[in-house]
Structure formats: C-alpha cells, structure tokens
Length: 472
Ligand SMILES: [Zn+2]
Image 1 (spheres, rainbow, N blue to C red):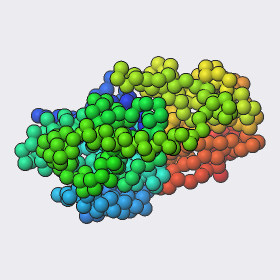
Image 2: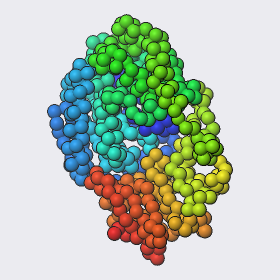
Image 3: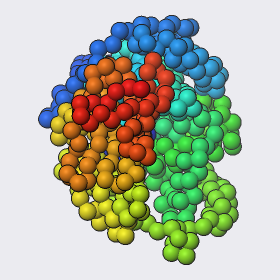
Image 4: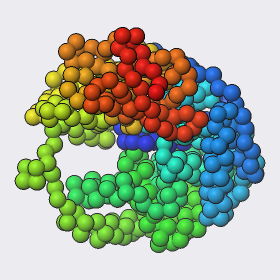
C-alpha cells in the first residue's frame, strides 16, 4: 500500500510550517484517513449537499450550489488532461475523483483530508492504495484556479506513472524517497507544465536571488528541498529543460526517474546534472542581470524606505522567516496596521499589529488570532483591512467559526466594537468575505464575498444599535 500526498503551497512561510510533506510513502497497513492531533482538532462548521459532475477522466464532486463552477472545472481539467497526456505519454486507467469547494475556508474544514490544512495550501493530490483524489478550493481568480487544478493534475500523472512502474517491479520505497528529495523536479514540473511558462513571481525571485546571491545549483536544490527550491527555482529550471530538450523530454525523464531515480534518469538521457546546472545558471545570469541593472532600488533618495525588519531566516538551521502582510495606512499617514506572525506565542498564527510609520517596532498587538473559535485566523494572504476615514476604527476580515467574518476594532476603546458580521442570514449564504472598506461617513462597509461559487461586491450598513450588519 502506498500513499502519496502533494500539498500545493501558496507561499514560503506556509510551506515551511506545513512541513515538506509533498510525497508521503507508507508501507504495510493503510494509513488511517483521520489523523490525530495534540491540542488542535479540525472542526467542521458547514454541512454540504454533494453532487457529482462526471466526464471521461474526472468525477467532480461539489456542493449543489456549484453546478456552473463544476462545469468550468471539468472543462479546465479535460483541457489540461489532453495536453499533459500527450507531453507525458500517459493515460488514466480510470476517472479521478475531484472534490471542489466554494471557498478556502470550506476546503480547510473538509472531512476528506484528516490533516489540518493551512491558509497557504492551495490544493491537495492524494493517492492511497486504489483511492485517488484531488481536493481543492475555487475561491481564487479564474487564472489561479486553472493553475492549481492543472498543477494538481500533473501530480496525478506523476502518481499514475509511479504506480505503473511499481506494478512493473520498481522499488517504491527507494524511488519514492529519491523523488521526495528532488522536489525541484516533482513540484517544478507541476508548476512549469501547469503554466506552460515562467510566471512573474518566479521571474521576481530569480532576479532577487541573482542580485542578493541565494540562487542554488541543482545539487544544492536537492539538499535543501524547501519552497524556493521546489516551486520557484524548480519551475525556472524545468522551464529551461523544457526549452532545451522539449516538453516531451520532461515526460521521458519522468518515466525513467520512476524506474531508476531522478539523477540516474538524467544520466540515461546523457545529461550531466553539474553541466546542466552550470549552463542554466549562465542562462539565468545573462537573462536577469541586465534587468537588475535597470532597476530603481528602495532608498532615501528615491523616497522609498523599509519600515519592518524581516529578520533573515536561515533554512539550513530550520528557521522560519517572519512575514509581514496586509498593510493598511492611517488617514494621517502616521500609523500602519499589518498582519504578522512575529512574536507569536502559537506557532503559525498571525496577529494584527499597530505600528508607527517612523519605526519598525510595533506599538501594540491589536487583534490576536488562534485562541478562540471567534478569531481562528487572519487571512494574511488574501485580505487587507482598512482604517475609517477619521482614523478612529479599523475594519478587518478574520476566520470565525470556520467562516470569514468582518470585525471592527475601535482604537478609543482598544477593543472590538460591539458587533461583527455574524448575522446568521449572512453567515449561511455568504462565504469568503475579504477586503472590507469603510464609506467616508463611516456608516457603511463594502467587501467581497462568494456565493454560488461566484465572487461579488457587497455593501453592508453598520447598525451599531443592534450590533449587526444588514445586507443592502
Ligand atoms: Zn505540487
């Protein structure tokens, strides 16, 4: 019995916190689907009515509200299937179950994956013996949804090819261990093939890595299988390999790697990894160096300065970088509120901090998350809060009882005001609330929300007498 798990990571920090559990191989008895945790349990807040949309290669399982989204999902999947099936020269023997959710909150609380899922996990591909499944939320942009669907689909092809090779007698433990170290190969392939190119984020990391000096050779990427090696450097390298040897060459390397391991598959193709590494680095230098020279850097002369200190973390020492996200500037320009995991007493939790724009040091922590079912988590990757126009209040989105809620913090009282968007009518019908903003007179709030798998704008009136928001 073998079990694979691919977690698609949306960011470096969550990748590290989530652990490098990209491929888990277990032998002997099947792993229980529901894992046990100390101190943390996954709570399911919402019950859904499941339907299935079936195509030639997929069985897409979804909530009854999501028929249109499920149709789009099957079209995207079948389109990527046709492309990957040709590049990787492989066909599925039977349709793959796919589970989709309207929002990331619902995905995080799902009962299919026993493990706790972080905000940074974009999707999961899992193989347990005869069971195969892809599990993912759809509350991001269409472009990102297509990317995550197709990224996970590449992992399904990798699993299919791996299982075929095991059936032919390959040693699953040995090959599985090697594949799980060569994450730049496994994840880089999923990133490159799902996009068909290199995305702007990866270009940015490559330029920064070249300038600051943290680019890695293929050997170093194998020794440090973290987010950078797996996703960004991996994508850039697989794009280079695809251009040099053709995408079908990647398919041939993958098939061979499930028989003999990644490095020996390169030897089989008469590619010396050290020479390839040197050629690739020379290419990176000649591509990005001229761009770096044309850059304007943040400094006093350009009027741009850094106000927080990210405290460089060394991945070789297992250090996790502190992150700063979701900034909001006060109307008078003297204060900022940001979301950060710095000084967190609970690992992996983000808090809202108030700071002066003159100094890196926070004045105080205004909202602490992760301690109650009312404020489980900030949405640091997708939502930004805002000051009221008079600067006396701060409106923000938080995960509350498994759903997104809007809260208002009052600086005068140093606490949340008497209300939050927890009205049951709204909570039952509206998901994924993000990016709230005050009206100039402070009586209304606009925010984005998801209903029937579609993102819309919503305006709510603040009725502080009743302590509720009502939908306009
Ligand atoms: Zn992946």
